[in-house]
Picture 1 (spheres, helix red, strand yellow):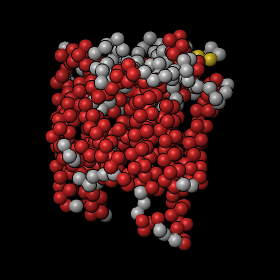
Picture 2: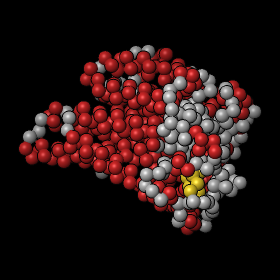
Picture 3: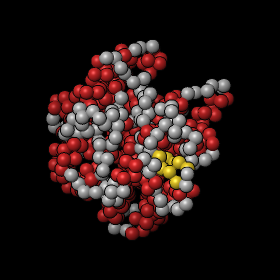
Picture 4: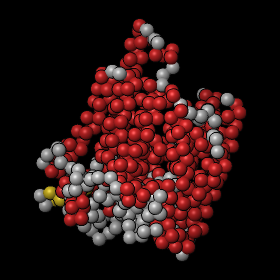
Length: 485
């Protein structure tokens, strides 16, 4: 028995190290200023678990920053969270289990700690899991374990996936579920070995049943992504088209769509209980005039694309994706090599269309800057798809890839340690907000402070040490694994 466990641990040691390094890193920070986007979801959780109601009347207007939020829908004199319910629903069992356990041992945790636990076991856990999935998926393009590890680290630590994996925002879970939906279609249905596809008789029937199960699972993840972050409907539609092009079977598409529609029944039921109709959204009943006016433009705030906004979310220091994560520039060139892989031509078009369409969505949205934020947070769901083409450059231009990765990781550590929810009044967040805060020793609460009593920049020493040791260990283990395969 122990021999089997040891063999299993040895086989998956890279995945284990990667997962726990990511999860610990994301759990290192305990942001003291949650922000409206976070508190509206936490208020929903508190209302359901502690009061048995969907209304957040008892919380949203309290002066405490742990409860107060302007992201509120108002209907018939009652107030509700205006967000898609998916993430909050994931947080409900985590909070309920934690608070009940605390009651048993006679502990009364603060809202800060409750929020931290909920974030750690939802957003942080899911984001760490995605890192492992990406590592496995990249093997399709490059068998070199070290290249795959470095691409995952570049994505996980060098893009805005890092800071938003430490916050109770819905973008990361939506990204995880969208990519899981694609991953299951690709690995379990599209990319089957020839001997499996050519099975006959009873074996063929069994394979069809198995395929149906995977289609339902894939559809569930896509559906849950949709009720977690509504704009990812653009990605889900792309997955439907992709699936049809792979299988050319309406039956398979229907199987994929069934769990999506079942998932949609969840917000429909919540909307009915809150607003008297299943077809309403919280965004239609915004309490604040500025949000209500903005969301009334076009289709829920989506109007026409703007080149000025495109500049703002790509290279400008304000919200520029490639400013904050220069390593992603490699992806732009990686798509060229991706296109040349004829056997992955359908995946190339899927990834490219997802990226382009989501950028178009962001530059057409009235609040394209995302309020208090670091980088263009609305495009986080496409980051896994955007990051994958980097694998071609990591195998060709190692020194350049490593250099851009280190710069990106450094910028993301700075942004996360200072506070990723940068007030929108700062046009140059890095120079006007993040760096000055760190220079004055203002660092967001973290495990270095709580566990070791470290203050200011010194509180980051445990994290930086772990990152250096962890990434170094991953590189070493991946090199050894490559030599033995």
